[in-house]
Length: 149
Image (cartoon, helix red, strand yellow):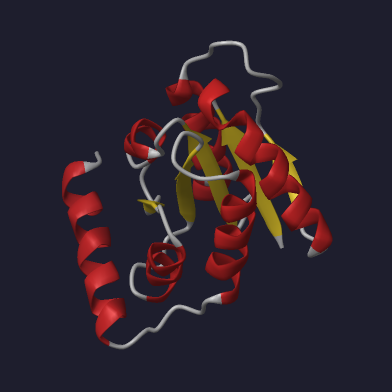
């Protein structure tokens, strides 16, 4: 598996912990930045990760900013991306099981690096539930087809 990771300055500490967790699992990492805590614009990193996932170059992505909100909004502008903001273990699991999220967004001002690493592990270990959830994901895809020209 190959996972793209990216963050702005508000998520940098989380990114380092997430990368360590992914490495422990033997997952190939595509690090799209940022490289330190200098102020940067989160849409740039959201787009870089979302393009990796949407193109199929990476199976999944993890994004981090101060809250996870802005970076997820930007990522969700890319067709084919289902980026979920997750703030706890439950939302991480449900984003995979119910929503088939291919990217999760985490908040560096909300989570500790240890929590973020654990959440990524839970997200990766939780299978998509299919069934009634598949029909809902299909409806999301239909919305994309209608509005993403």
